[in-house]
Image 1 (cartoon, rainbow, N blue to C red):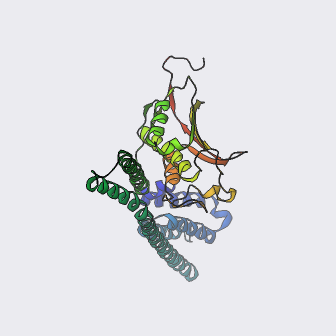
Image 2 (cartoon, helix red, strand yellow; image 1 turned 60 degrees about the horizontal axis):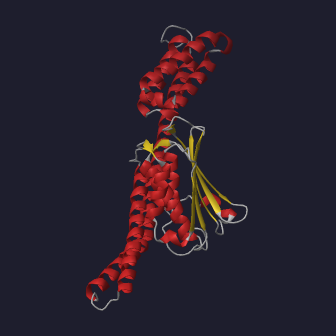
Image 3 (cartoon, rainbow, N blue to C red; image 1 turned 180 degrees about the vertical axis):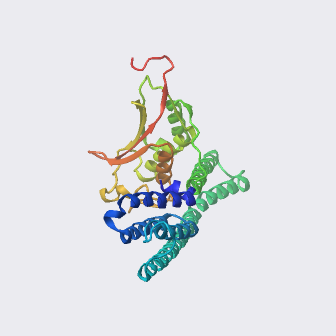
Length: 355
């Protein structure tokens, strides 16, 4: 309704003043023409809350003329029977104009304050982002440069084991660098609003195994388990978004959970929803901080160094972009569990939902 008013400001003004006028014509014998002035003034005030100043001034002038012509004695003429009524009409018009101008000024100030806060928020966001990434990008780049330099300058004096270790260092740092760049690009897309969900048929089983393989060799230090029903259908989701969501959740486990614990990924489909869970058997989250883990740059107190605090906020943004929900809970014995629910179409290749 408000949007319709803003798109057709002059028509909205005419319709509201006209509607109130018709109402007043029916009740003016009961309430008197002075009460009619208050009703018209309220109408102008309502318009001033939503519209630009020009249609509001038009409404103020039009309502004053309507009040004079239709309600002030003698009726159906622009002549005014008494000096008192003339002063009332002049006062009405002045109050309507002042109200329109003041309301417009207040709205304009509020708009400028919101724009200033938005600009300050963006500056703060990008400053925090750059400060956070400066270390996270520098570390893997330094590792890659150092290992590559050793391979080039000491190639003859290095043992096979030393070369393998340097190559593993380069590979591990490259994966970490790639993840940080992906997170940076993803957050930029979310913040800018330049974002489109591209749904297609996806084999979730294959996607999850691919995510796990991408995280090798780091994930090999954990006990891994993947649970997917044998009759899992193809689902229509954005493959790129879902893959990065799962990747970020598993990366979060690797980053903050002791080595040798469990990383468990589950997928299921029921009632039009794809459900994905990533759980672990670590220490879990402090209960007081569970509601804040999806905020940008938030890091759980006492967590080990590393990471930008963007991974989980990106997951939440991607889930919401697909009209889904994400939740986090601590498990009864140990560890935590992230649960994602995404509305999705399904296609059973064999035409059978339950075997």
